[in-house]
View 1 (cartoon, helix red, strand yellow):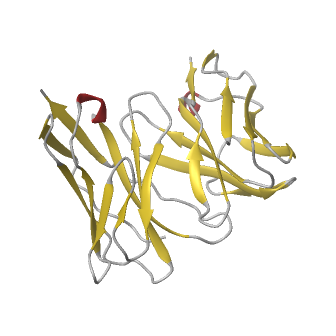
View 2 (tube, each protein chain N blue to C red; view 1 turned 45 degrees about the horizontal axis):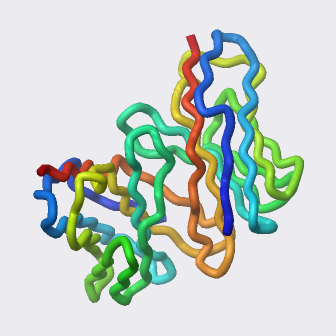
Length: 112
Length: 111
């Protein structure tokens, strides 16, 4: 069966510091990968998606970037965090006939 | 992707059926209706999806109207653990079909 991992689970970072969040998927090959962000009490905002290694599409202009160095690895990064980058970051994968999305456990980022 | 409209909150008595409505009047012919739920501080959990026929699995049933402009998620016997935010999404099953998540419906199951 397929599983998706995210780490760390929680992170507290000062403003201006760099960021690296990692997401890995097991049990499937060539998945579509997604990064979402969720503000408190709100729905999910799609940040990036990837259909293959090195292929990244950005949905909103922002202080963040994404990379996909391996088939089942998706990384969310920032060179300098802003207060507004705080939130709950979710990675998801999809694939197969239905292309249903499945979400990871999330990373709660607090920028102080 | 088409937008959806859901009530912000609903209550349900434990053991009773929970019926969560969703309007998606601008849905396209190739778009599916998906339902997810999110328990506090966890990632969304996939529940069920359908195109035009009603669907049932071990978690829930999905009823889609004939014109496909609305749907209802049914939890047949709600438990306290079903308390969560429920999201209705419509999206096409194309490669990297992106999902637009609104604010969902907060379902509170009460003893």
